[in-house]
Amino acid sequence: MYNGSVSINQNIYDFGKTTKNLALEEKNKEMLQFNIEQSKQRLSLIVMGTYYSINFLQEAIRIKDDQINNLNKHLLFVQKKEETGSATQYDILSTKVRISAIENQKTDLQTALEIQICQLNSFLGRDKNSPVLLKKEIQQTEIIPSVDSLCNEAFTNRYEIKIASQKEEISELRLNVIKAQNNPSLNFQATGGYKNGYFNSNMEDIGKVNYVVGFVLKIPVFDANRSKYSKIQVNSEIKSHQQETEVIRRNITNEVVENHANAMAALKKIKQPELQVQQATQAYNLAEVSYKSGTITNLDLLDSYTALSESKLALFKTKIDYSVNLQKLKISLGEQIY
Image (cartoon, rainbow, N blue to C red; front, side):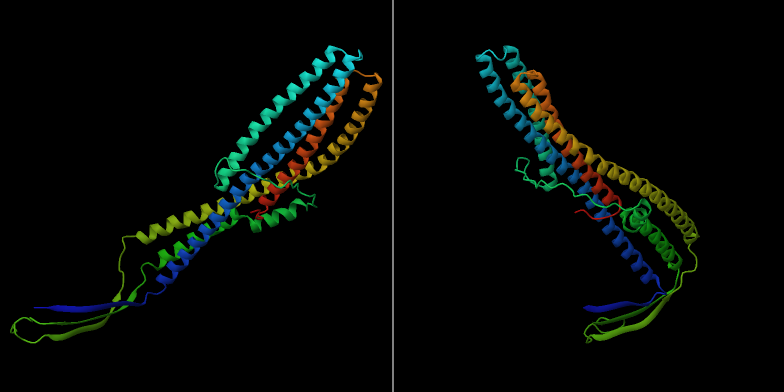
């Protein structure tokens, strides 16, 4: 006895149920892509902070090296003066104390630099001991538009707004799916086969071909109010997403205003350290001449050089602060920095 058959069941028309489900899945796919882009933006912000920290620490170490080299030269000069009686042992000791203090500061900076390099290598997926070579690039000053225009740009570009809008659209599509779940559906069915051993037949009978072809119409009658309560739930979700969107808009406005103010303040601060470096350089040059002529003490000269080094580092830090705040402003506007 044998029996073989093939069946086909094809949906012909379901009054929009499949179309609405496909639209819902497409929106879910788009929202997942927005979430990926948002994660990239957040990761870029973290990497940017690490990059500029390394940049600052490298420059600070370079300035400390210049200080140490300059003080060592000054120590030799003071030691020669001490041999001729023009300087005292106190001058030598005070210079050595300054050198030792700066070397300790350099050690702390090197430790911090190693930690930041390790973190950057971790972000890059490389070995923690991999060398890191950074381009020493500081953001050029740019014209920053008004806050109102920036807020409108942020509302258009920010992924938070896009994701919130997607949530609203997804909830509305879910509502459409719920409304359509009790729609009728029309299917085509066909079954064909070949077998023997029919009832009241001889077992030696030759097998026969058999088939069935027809249409099936399914009409849901009662769902125990499931669709009713599902609609209530989804409508509540839509209102919740609308409120969430408004909160996000307010938060983005606050973020843009804050970053705009910080960027403008950092831009104004750049001019003052530049003037301080010029003044500190002139003061140190005058101090060198005055020390050689004996009109100021060794400590006065060391203080003058320390002020010059600190003003250089302050200028570099101000430029980095401006670069960081400008990048944060761009991120708050939804610009891709990766």
